[in-house]
View (cartoon, rainbow, N blue to C red):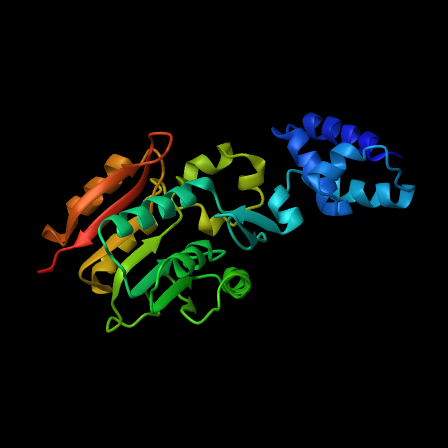
Length: 290
C-alpha cells in the first residue's frame, strides 16, 4: 500500500470520527509513525509500505479515532518553540499559557524587573517553569504540583530544556508543603478553572483524556483561584507580583475576588485580555505595607 493511500484512508476515518483537523492529524501521525518529514510525505507519497507496517499504523490511527489527543499519542507538544514531553498525567500546554508568558516577560522587561525567586504553582508539565528559567536570570524557580506523576513529566522537561540547577520540583497541595519563611518576588499559576458542570460539554479529547483534577475547580470554576488568592500573600514578598491564567468568562469574578480580598492585601489588580480580546490573565501586587 502506498503512503498516499494510507494518508487518504486515515483522513477519511478521522473525518468520520468527528476530528476537526483530520488532514493535519493524519499527516502528523504518519510523520510520527514512519519518521517522515512533512516534505517527504508530500514528495514521496508513492512509497510502498508492507501490510505489517500498515496494520501497525492503523493501531496508532485507531487511538486518534477514539479521540485520544494527538499529543498523548506522539508524547510531545510544541510550546514556546520547544518540544515538551506530555502524557495523560498532565494537561496539554495551550496557546493561552503562551500568551500569559509572552505578556509577563514583556511586562517584566518593560519595567526593568528581574525576580530572583519565582514560584510556579500548578506546574503540570513544567512549561511555565522551563520558559521562565530560560528567559529570566532567577536564582531559584520552585515548581509545585499536587500530582507526583505530573512532576515526573515536569522533571523530564526540566532536564531536556534547562540545566536544571535553578528549578526545584515540589509535590504539594498548593501551598500546604511550603514554609511561610520562603517568599517570592513573583508567583505564576495556571490553575484549574473550568466550571464543574461544563465538563460534559467539552471535546472528548479534553473530557475523556486530560486529568480532571487539573481542569475542574468547583461549580464556578473559582475554587483553586480563591485558595491561591487567600494564601499567596503569605508567600509573596512585599511588593511581589501574582500572575494567574483565568477562564475567558471569569474576568469580572476574579477581579472582584482580588479587589475585595481582606481589605486591600492586593493592589494594582488588573485583568489582561489575550490576542482574541478575551480575559486571560489576572495580575495583582501585594501591598508593600501588607
